[in-house]
Length: 282
Image (cartoon, rainbow, N blue to C red; front, side, top):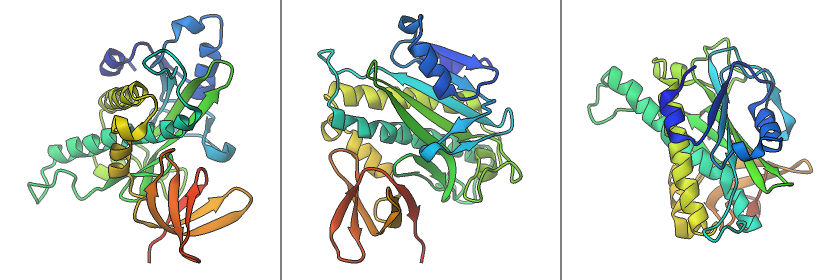
């Protein structure tokens, strides 16, 4: 896969014919003898990942050529070249999720343009794209992309992995709550165009965030993420560490990117830093 559009927006992009995990491969490269050759914004991509990983150590296998596994290397610094505050790192998966949500939205619009909708003002074909806190992109409520960020403690670098479902059919889907761009739109996407859009958007949002010293509000990142996050305003169930459960309304994101939920039981607000979130429908 040549990926000329994507190569044009990344300082280094390597396509792997196959990989067990692009996050693992990028971690090895970024910490190896050629670490200097892997700058901030470097990317590894494959369409054949044999042991992808998600949150809580979950693994999955996708058919060759029907998904993209994308790993981006970040070397976070503020304008003075110093590290970002530790609390700022919680925004990184949300920034990636926002960039992917925007890229998927434009891919859906491009698919709609190839088959004009009944409503000329609606290029989405009735397909709704939203970010689900903290790390999924949904199309009409079904997962099309998952994101996993990993800190490299030795260097302070971060690897952000994303798995995007391109052309999976019903028989390929890993779960009943998954979908692909092909299934959602009826049109096979331009993988290079979607990838380039994601990488460019990610770089733009992250650079603004870093320039503001990791301040999501001042950089405009908080507003972008909140505007794309379909979790906000939803009734949710959050499975917390320790087998605890929180039911309530997702009201907002706090300064550190945590989800603030107003508990149904007592009306009190609780900030959630990690947990599986389910959007409830009544």
